[in-house]
Image (tube, rainbow, N blue to C red; front, side, top):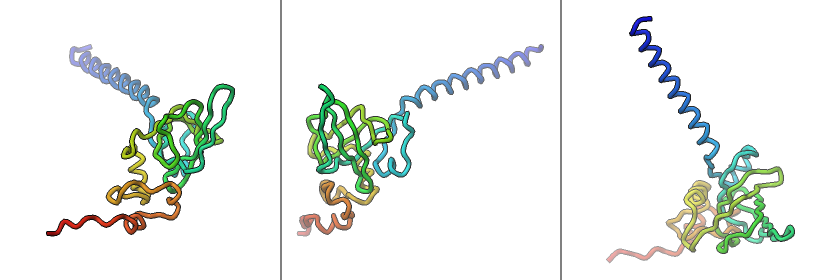
Length: 176
């Protein structure tokens, strides 16, 4: 074997090792990635049952049901993006800021009976909305932030951005 041939085999072995290391790293990272989905995306194409996702939207007013399983509190509620709603089941204590008609992000998996959340995140003040939830509402045409806060969940079935513009208070005039 000539020196040139040995060097070629060494380069090929190094490239193969680098490729194998990159493939192993990508496989390890892919199991830890958590995608954000909206209720309409979940209804149209449910994620696999073993895949952890973040479900974001607004809590439907009047949908929160609380019960107990022994000492463990269980909450069931619906999350909507204005186009579809998904039932969420959460075992544990909900955040203090959790309320109907406000934005929420639930981390969990899809089950045959709905979404099973392992964690529920609620907004921390009256102006906060998760970026993904805001983008989903804008994309669905249910909210334009230039015209004030998001509409209440009860009005989503009939409201469009044009309706919100009509109902928005008039902007103050800046003409001299």
